[in-house]
Image 1: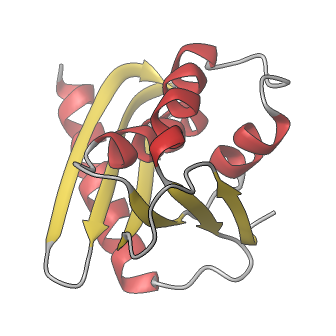
Image 2: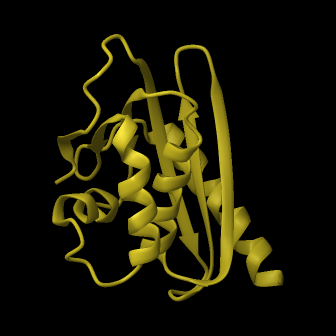
Length: 148
């Protein structure tokens, strides 16, 4: 995992817009207050989206960042997801063999169908500055959640 695995689900369009999604997450304790961030970047645009939860886990936050990043796309895209965790990619590859976070996994399976998706993660995770930016935003979201 983590080194250019393709999850090609949508093959109806050529010349799809290329979008990179950089994900970050942070939990103050695991489980505990947590935050997630997805930074979407195309050749013309950059957008950061984020959120969190008061009682969550790192894995749930990584899945949520991935799902929310994909859901933010307004048209079918050729997507590269950069993530420091192998969990989102593994969750797709194992298709329902993971018992935790099934509600978020269901959202992920439904969201990915209109896009060409590729994951890049450990140990060859590029885009370090954007991943660091996503992690900082996720840390802020986790702090907000801990203050309640």
